[in-house]
Every structure is written in C-alpha cells, then in structure tokens.
Amino acid sequence: MAYQEQQAEHKRIVIDTPSSRREVSSSETVRYPERNGVSSAALAAIVVGVVVVAAIVILFVMNQQQQDANANVAQAQQPPTTIVQQPAQQPPIVVQQPAPATQPAPVIINGQSAPATTAGGSATTRTGPDDGTIQNTIDKRLNDDPTFSQLGVTASVLGGRVTLMGTVKTEALKKQVERAVRDLKGVKSVDNQIIVSS
Image 1: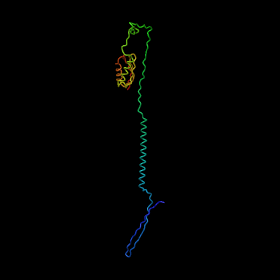
Image 2 (image 1 turned 90 degrees about the vertical axis):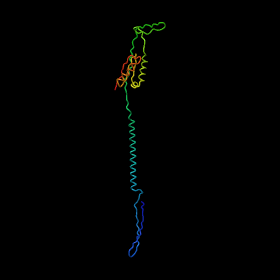
Image 3 (image 1 turned 90 degrees about the horizontal axis):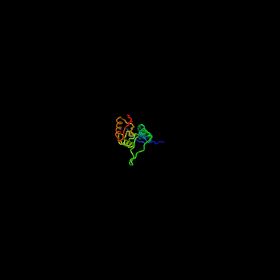
C-alpha cells in the first residue's frame, strides 16, 4: 500500500468572555496525497528530452544514408570514355617487276666490279637515303614536335614516296604535317591521306 504522509496540527485558542476565560484546544490531522517521487513537470521535461534525442538520432541516420547514397552515385558515374578511331593503316603495295630474260654478267675491271646497269644499259646510282632511314627521320620529326606528337598521324615510305594517314582537326594542321615531311632529305613525293574532322 502506498505511503501517505500525515501531519497533526494542534491549536490552542484562548477565548475571553466577560464572565470567564476559556481555553479551547483543537487538533487537526492533515493528510497529503500519495507522492510518486516525480512531479508532472519533471515527467513532461523527460518526455520532451526523449523526443528531441530520438529526432536527432533519426536525422543523423538519414543524413548518413544520404551521404552513402551520394558516394555510391558518384562512384558509379565514371568519366565518359572518348574513343578516337584512326583509319586502318594499309600496308604498302609492293609490285615486283620480272627480271629481264637474260642479264649479262657484271664486267670486272682491275679487280673491281662495274656499277649496276638498268635494262637499258645505263648505270644507276643511289643518291639519297634508303626508305628505312627516311621512315626513321619522319617518325623522329613527328614524335619530337609537341604539336604533331598528339595528332596520331602515321607515315609509310616506299621508294622515297611518303603516304601520310591519320585524323586532324583543321586543314591547316594537315598542310603543316605535309610540309614538315616534304622538307626531309630523300622524300620524293608525299601522298597526304590525312582526314580533317571537326
């Protein structure tokens, strides 16, 4: 059973009347209602505090989930891939001429062989670099120049004739590459097949 507080109050009252003097004593017992130890104001403050803490926890959890979702979306989005297609490089066409039916034996003069002769009988001498040297020179020129090295232009050499292939953004770049190759020693002609794309 719940504990109830009691308080007894004793009062003494003196009553003076013209004929007598009398003393009246009264006692009163006061009972206070049952107390649980927590007032209603304290209980209301506790409830409000619990609601506030719960709201903060819920907001924190939702914020974490949103940040995780944003991180996952950012991670899923990869930068767009740029694909640059280069035209397929065709191998040079080699045409072999049949050897003449009869070829005279070389003439030896004083222990030295005579210079090579063509079918007509005249001597031929090579006065420039061979195709491999020309190819190496062109590759070096294109790779060493910062403007040309980023273009991806390729060159093939056959008999001193250069074929240029690739893709550039402007007609001026196309002509600039051709001039750079045409000026090299041993280049007889340039077939510029570079494509201009914008």
